Amino acid sequence: GAGVSQSPRYKVTKRGQDVALRCDPISGHVSLYWYRQALGQGPEFLTYFNYEAQQDKSGLPNDRFSAERPEGSISTLTIQRTEQRDSAMYRCASSLRGQVRDGYTFGSGTRLTVV
Amino acid sequence: GENVEQHPSTLSVQEGDSAVIKCTYSDSASNYFPWYKQELGKRPQLIIDIRSNVGEKKDQRIAVTLNKTAKHFSLHITETQPEDSAVYFCADNNAGNMLTFGGGTRLMVKP
Image (cartoon, rainbow over all chains, first blue to last red; front, side):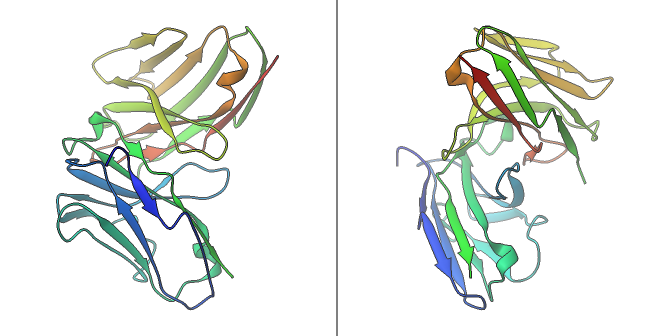
């Protein structure tokens, strides 16, 4: 696609429910990144992929968070048993050649609210 | 892990004045330093970046300087305009292929 697409734009869920956030990167981009951005703060790294391989998941807060990119294109970030502290904007970004120096293109994000 | 400190957290300037935002980083292996601009309700967008083999880079009214010895880099905006009002984030790549972001600076340009 022309840009990085994320869905849904907004998600309100009850505490304890599982949620799946989707990211469709720019076509042909090798790397896909997931970040979390709290209100008024900078994006915080969660995990990233080159093609379908998860390269680094050191930023995932705990084992309730997981991500996959099975065919090297669309990625899903799943949060199990959501908690109120999971409420944030979740942003996906992609870059062309698998190098951060290519620059990130961010998506519009999914605003998750856990009630 | 890597730590990127950014200041000030808010900056208010008069239209036409200059604005300077500073960042420090901790990992000496960092070699790429981008700056992102995020307007209210929108996604962060890359506005300028600098690599470690360069001390300064300029693009029209925006410039970035890097001091690797002191581990700090700065964004300079000259002749500020109201449309420059936004939150600005610095970042570095530390030793990996991901970015660590600073906490952001809210720049307000008063007409």
